Image (cartoon, rainbow, N blue to C red; front, side, top):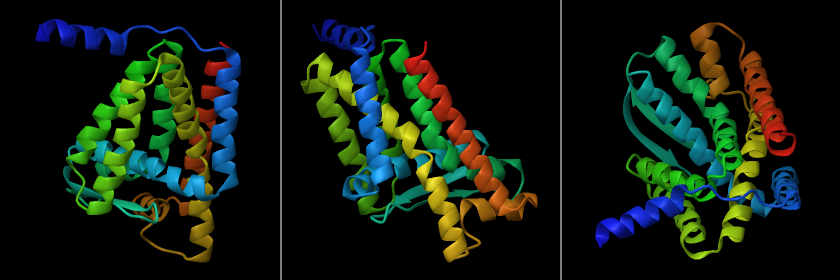
Length: 238
């Protein structure tokens, strides 16, 4: 009985679902863009999800490059820090730092690939599993609240809402991650001008590579904008 139930859940989660009407795709994209551009209270709350992806990118890159991951801390001002141990220089450290500002765009594009394959519920459950894995690495109370809260929202949508609501939420979430990847890059450069710090990702990369920090900000911006363009093309023109 339990095996049959598990099999049914697995089938429901990873079954192919029909594409929503085009107006849903466009409307969710417009709402996501409005949230990012407005910079209001909704953006400040939703930005926590971007920080989760940012720090998750650092963490995954650290593990893949052979560094020892110590933990992740998320803060109420939507900043965060991922601590890993290993060589203080070299390609592993460069990749680890580089992954932060590019991770939200990668998450957004990966979501779009799943959506175009009709794996709407699958996208939501993969997100839950990734959040659960990240929770094991969180080392402060606010971080736990942010990750658990995000996971609870995604779980509630995936478990208790009809497919139309899941589809709307999945497209909104994916568009948001894609568009929201760009704004923090410009915020980074603005902060570097107002309050120069050797601890920003761009300035750490500058120290490690000899390439000016502003150039690394441009790399982040070009990469994320390219992901946005590719995502728009995949969702609207293919």
